[in-house]
Each structure stands twice: as structure tokens, then as C-alpha cells.
Length: 239
Length: 128
Image (cartoon, rainbow over all chains, first blue to last red; front, side, top):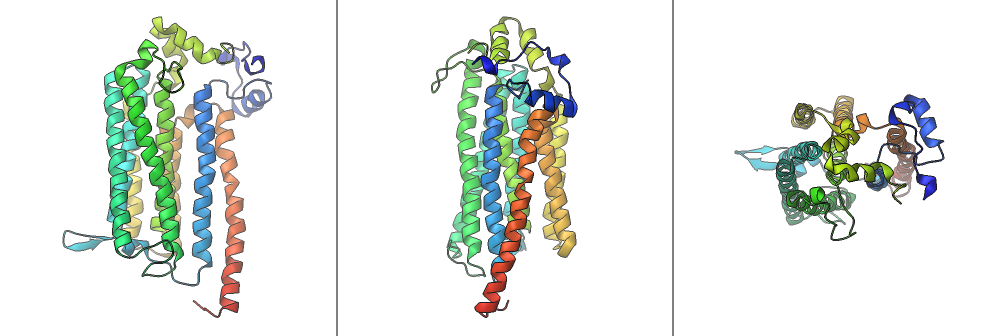
């Protein structure tokens, strides 16, 4: 593993800017100098996930651009009858606010984790998990509403058949990511609350000692889920 | 192995002295206010993009507003919430530049779907 070691160049001596990029990448050592492997690998995973969702959105674009039938109007499809009138897209707007709020609580949890504030970190992570579960719950409601109205992957009452396939594929994959994130959040929150990262307890899965950086890595995943929703919201629901 | 992960391992060994640990992550210490401000901005931008639909703006105005609000939100999330603004450029470029190549894919599929639409209209007589 010698080739992955960092030289003894002190951090403040490392060049910055583009010169730093060249120096880091050509150093014959690990390229990400001040980033741990756990964090770098989470970034690499999210990087690959970007392409997965990118492909979904491009597939949706291709289907929508090449169909000769009219595309269903998302504004009307996702409207809810509330307070005596039809509000366009209201459920999706609420889901967006819920997910953004969960991102906010997660960012604060990471901050408190680095201050070793166990209680606040765990509470904020649990709050994030609750908001995430709320999001998934509203998505389940949305799915069942659309299925009852006759939307199927192979057809729907309003126009192009590809609407259903794109909708179930994209929101389904995103919902799966949120669900996995909620589980991941609960596991890390339990570890924080129990003080595993202070007592150097070994994890149940890898038997390795964790540290508070796990909260930040968890946070990266969660913010990514929010980030994907920003793109889905813009391209699928608003376009 | 200890050498390989020396940076982090060193910090966890130094847990008897919290100062040593704090030093490692000093670039992650931001006031909570920063996150609240970003949160409020994300709310405002989301509300704006919802209003684009609510007022049924159409045409180029609609699309440009949607894209602008989307990019601003994505930028805030990546830069502040995911701490990209404080990472070294070698990580920032490694993660953010390659996805831009997806735009080439978008262009290819735009050409392809125009062609598909043309063949459908020409050979199946289904004018829109």
C-alpha cells in the first residue's frame, strides 16, 4: 500500500488552484489529498449515480421528443383538489419542501457531529429520517392516486403512453434511493446516539471502528438524493 | 495499512486530545446560520419555480426560469450542503467536470429523437 501513502508535504505547502490540481494528480500518490477514502468513495458512488439518473432523464427526454401523441400536462395530472379548488402540482411542491427541509436538518446534523454534540446530531438525523419517510409516504400516495386514475407503464388516459413508464421508472428509482437513505440514516443515528464514535466501538457489518466522518458521508448521500429531486422536479414535473 | 490511511487514523488516535481532532476537520466548522440561510434560499427558489407553474408561464420564459432556478438550487446544495466549496480543486474537477459530458449525450439523443419523430410522421402518417 506504500504507493498510496501521502508524502510529508505539510498541507499548507500544497499549491492551490489549477497548479494544485496538476500537483495532486501527478504526485504518484493518492490524488485526493485531504479527503479520507470513505468520503472519496462516497463521492465516486454519487458520481456514478449521477450517470444513472442522467440516463433516465435523457431516456425521458428522448421519449417525450419523439412521440407523436401529446404529452400529458403534468400541471393537471398532479393537481389536487384542496380548499374548494384545483391547485396545480401542489403535492409535488409540498414534497419538494419536505425534501429540502430534510437536507437542511442533515446539513446541521453534520455540523453538530463535528462539534461532538451527540444528542443534537442524533435528533437532527432522526428528524431528517422522519422527513424522508414523509416524502416516501407522499410518493406512495401519489403513485396510488395515479394508478387508480388508470396510469400504467404502457398507457394512460391523457396521451403519450411513455408518460407512465418514465414516471414510474424515474420516481420509483428516486423513491428507492430515499428509502435506502432513511434506513442508512437510522443506522448512523443509532450509532451516534449510542456513542459508538466516541468509544471506538466496532461496526456490526465491517467490524471497523467508525468516526464522526460517517455522519458527513451519510450527509453526502442524503444531499445527493435531494439534488436528484431538484432535477426531476424541473424536468419531469415543471417542463 | 496504517500508512495508507495515515491522515484519518492519526486523527482517531488523537481522540484523547480533542484539539488534535478538531484541527483535522477545521475546514468543516461553519456557523449554523450559514445552513439556515441556504435553507431559506432553497425554499425561496423552490417557491419561485412552483410559481412558474402556478401562473402558467409559457415558452422560453418558462424554460429559462425553470433552468435558472434548478441550477441555482443544485449549486447551493452541492457547494454548501455537500461542502464542495471547501474541497481541493482536484476533487471538485474530478466529480463535477465529467457529468458535463452528459450534455453531449443529450445533444446526440436530441438529434436521434428528431429523426425518430420525422420517420414516425412520414411513414406512419400520424401528423401531430
